[in-house]
Length: 222
Image (cartoon, rainbow, N blue to C red):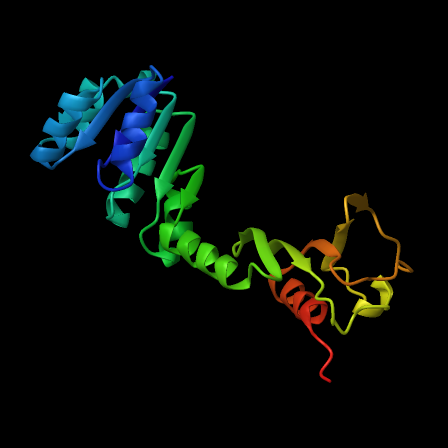
């Protein structure tokens, strides 16, 4: 695979090392000279110190042959421009970009990125998962599509114990995918009766899924 990596900071550097070790053909655009020297000494990659004519650098890197571009700088405007050049000028098949600010995710996608990853959002998800790991874990969340997948464990004194799936409340905007009970995987009907320690996998719109999760996690006050 031929890849262009724009930005060799805290995210870009380990990715460069990873891809280089696996024999991919890399071109790296980076304006920091010390980082360029580090890459030259530790990775097999063509290095372009991105302080000159940006368009000329793309030409010298033979961008028309690239299979992948990764825009990994901490400047969203740069990542927007990289995504636009990669798609508009060179038709590169796959563009992955970093969004420093969550509000710029859509802007970067509109510029041409196929995948946009926002580290701050991912960190939020990981920390919330850590806080809630005793009872609930977010497996997937997409605010743009208003969609979420969660696995929630019913506590031993949960208020939903002995109640059916139907009693959770109806709604077309969520569904119970499956339930893990002991070592068995169950695809429940509406009449399925819930027990403590059942692990419920559900998906749907963000707001409704969160409400159902709270119902499943709720405990009896004694």
